[in-house]
Length: 495
Ligand code: ATP
Image 1 (cartoon, rainbow, N blue to C red):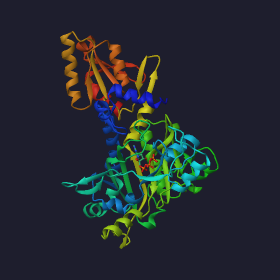
Image 2 (tube, rainbow, N blue to C red):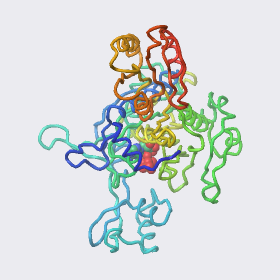
Image 3 (spheres, rainbow, N blue to C red):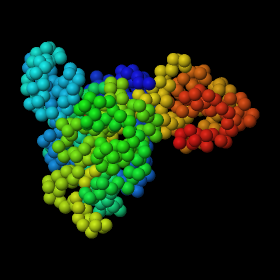
Image 4 (cartoon, rainbow, N blue to C red):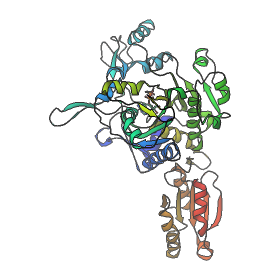
């Protein structure tokens, strides 16, 4: 069930998930604050990601780098010279708009990454005019998306807010390999803020100017490209594949197993196949509907010049299929750039082959937290006409509150006392909340709307036999369980 984006943003504000930032001063386009429920959901997404991508693996370690770095990082990475989007300016009213979005809205074609001359040709050929005043556009120009700042007193020196977390991983590569026991193949992961001065932030959290990324650089020895020790785990896993060829031939995406995709050379390396499946499985394990996920390969003209192959995990957002996560094979481009610009030896001594190599990033799974947040919310949002309220069917691992506890009525001290005795020890283990106001039906509805998977009601029978009712959010079914078994019951529900 896919609500529209307006509905979702209104819901998020009303319930305390997400607010426009600095709203009392009129807000700022592309910036959002997370409210009491939003911060819990966001933290749960990041914690789940970190657990499955770092803590539960032997081959990935994490770092937490700075947002402002030596600006040379961004010169080496190419961001200073080419992290740009084409911008169209109206020759008359001077209104500025992002060229690829404008053309996509008008002509339904993707022009992201096209050279400026080609953008201008398309504009001229289709006689596209300013959406505000109908005048012609000036020639398109490149606009760098990095936010600049000054470091130090007075004017200080120019620096940038990082536009991605990935480059900090490359810059720290040597320190990580010198100080941890990682051996190729291995990954370095990071979760953190990134900033992009997007020309036209839109679609609520989908395109913000301040957001967070969860990224991994996965390094291999150049000769290990064809050997992924994990690929056997996923050979029979099925994905909806939308290859570059299918897009060019105007075909529909096709469901196929990893085995089929590798045998037909649709996915080029076993590493890419493994990571595409891994990331898909992660979303599925947290309640995503597979019909809303697909793997789209970048067309040649979309690909960064250094990328050998790039696949996007796309989600069927309320406004269409869009990138949720990018997975590019970046080769040794970034490490080599940093070797060149820093003059430092960032090569790696491989014990197995007794040789020095510059490792290749065979895949860079790069996930935006906001886009995951939005997708999980869209997936969970159910306007239940029968119940007369929204039911947010979030996976229990993601739900901000795992359980709500109610004394059946609030004016009976013996009931409140019994309920508090059950509540206090649970509060130390789980994010649980107490609600004693209003009718029990109203309290269930409030819990449903914020995605609480289970509600416990303490009633008069509890005083007699120490049993409580547990109500399931999705089915509304209630069961009686012993108060002493609640912890086990809840652990089962959450896990
Ligand atoms: P798009 O084409 O949608 O602008 P991108 O290809 O520039 O995205 P990447 O540079 O690959 O994005 O960034 C990796 C991930 O970071 C994306 O898949 C997305 O989840 C997230 N991301 C990128 N830009 C934004 C943004 N402005 N707001 C929220 N998340 C973002």
